[in-house]
Length: 221
View 1 (cartoon, rainbow, N blue to C red):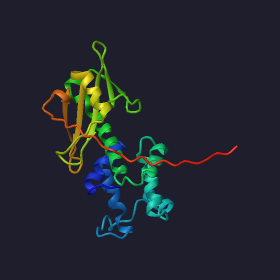
View 2 (cartoon, helix red, strand yellow; view 1 turned 90 degrees about the vertical axis):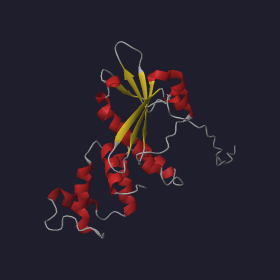
View 3 (cartoon, rainbow, N blue to C red; view 1 turned 120 degrees about the horizontal axis):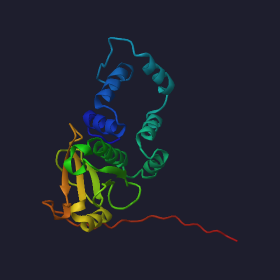
View 4 (cartoon, rainbow, N blue to C red; view 1 turned 45 degrees about the vertical axis):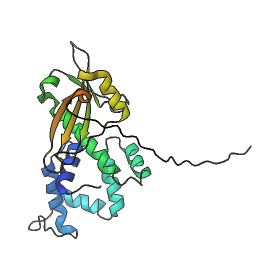
């Protein structure tokens, strides 16, 4: 799926599934003795019964078939995201980008109440509304706050805002928060930027020209 190593994969996939990275590592070790790889895994004891049942059920799938099965369980949009994944075959990092963004959103949902500015807020997921931010934070006494969540593999690196996200940040100003989940490759942590377009962050405008391929046909009478 394009991950740089096991730690990154465990962190990202586990957060996407609201599970523990250690649990994913344990399952890898459980199955290691039964597949060709340099690790020995838990080879000194029999495989657990429910794990053997799983291997008996899915062990004959090809790597491609099994990968599609796993993606269908991880993607929060299910079959629709899986179709998009298969359509965007030229974008080899699609799976990683999608799951990392998903993991960052699950991370935010798990920790937002630890931040003073969000403690009294009720969270509303707006990722499918196309409004320029991922979450609307509702309070009883003040206008809503907007949160755009980004995920990064490394502790530091580039973060991109779409045109719509940047415009939302300009419009909402101190009500807009950029929540960056960093260091998926080791141990995720986060940094928050309020009113990011007026903060210490320096945004550089980049314009990209894309070639759009279309297919046409003729329908006769």
